[in-house]
Image (cartoon, rainbow, N blue to C red; front, side):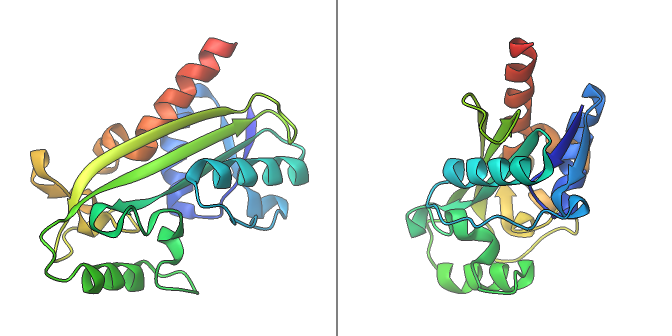
Amino acid sequence: MKLVLASNNTKKLKELDAILAPLGWELVPQGQLGVPEAEEPHCTFVENALTKARHASRLSGLPALADDSGLCVDAFGGAPGVLSARYAGEPKSDARNNQKLLVELGENDRRTARFVSVIVFVRHADDPQPIIAEGEWNGEILSVARGDDGFGYDPLFYIRELDKSAAELDAAEKNRRSHRGQALSRLVERLQARH
């Protein structure tokens, strides 16, 4: 099955592709089909993911998959949340986002946080029954970045039971444990149950 991915993030595409490839699904980034990025005006992951999926499906004529995810820091009441990718403003920059997070968190000893991912699948733009799956990955924010893999906030996201940051995990282990990996497995289960 050919799906449009409502994203142009190559690292996200690689992560999703690795998990969906065994199902025989071909993910095509929306940019390859001339689909511009959708507005993300909502304050929840689920509304933004649904908006992106419907937008990509409407403009491509294909079933669509969209992910909206971010980092929710307890000391900030869940921020940066849906604003994670643009936390330090435009243009998007992982390095500036990480720097801003460290500065704002400062010496705060409440460093618990979670990555949240909501993945939405629509068969067509007006699908009345989108499949929505969520994943959550709990950790803590380090005061110094560790690791060279991953993207986004991965170098600052510490998993205590592994004594590693998300950026120190290999791709297979990250996909098994991550918020996006969890959401995708749930999505796949629901899709298989539907057919």
